[in-house]
Length: 239
Ligand SMILES: C[S@@+](CC[C@H](N)C(=O)[O-])C[C@H]1O[C@@H](n2cnc3c(N)ncnc32)[C@H](O)[C@@H]1O
Image (cartoon, rainbow, N blue to C red; front, side, top):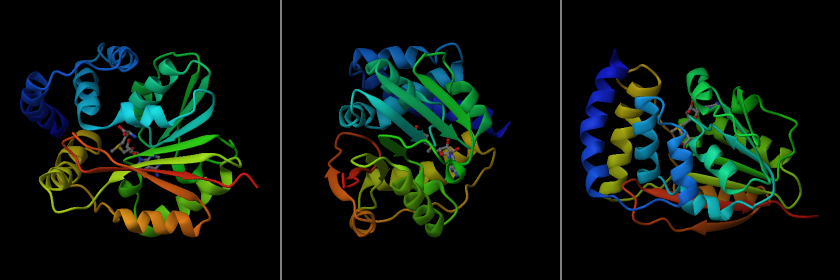
């Protein structure tokens, strides 16, 4: 019920923006979005997600080959896009939400989706771990620290962590992000009217944390999106 009402408002509100901002997508991202059209909610949501998140920018940072783990993959849109745009990539998506994991399975040969807590996922030794808008939804700052430590330990030498996070700033984009994270997101995906606390950190704070774990961190600037994003690419030493 909550989801239907929220879905109705999301359709009207975001539908307006999608209609006026009709930039063509990269053909592989367009193909990925089409996989979601069989269901009207995921179909609309995939269009909203590629409009509000810098997935094309993230894709360019991911090597064309190797094992890629997408932790908190949600409906798997980014994971399926990475699989389409890199047939030699092996993508494993993990999410705590059973329903979203079900929507993620689109039958692409180089994908696998697992219903699991990211904090419990062990033993894959991936080349890349992606966390797209996941860390701030964990239960505490300590849970973020623990997940990052586990990821770094599991990543192969020379591997990369690619983190897409919310960038706190004095901006309209940040305000929109807070409203979405505390109201629209919980209504759509947690069946709650007001969400639990989210745990944002400043960009410098993430950079210091990752650097203190021995990673070489680069920041990627994100512009032209309605949310306040940051992308961090943190590489594990080869020795
Ligand atoms: C904002 S959504 C982002 C989904 C997707 N990564 C994207 O960028 O569209 C956050 C996702 O993280 C998942 N999540 C939160 N905590 C998790 C955990 N401990 N383990 C696995 N998934 C988790 C939620 O179920 C949700 O699907």
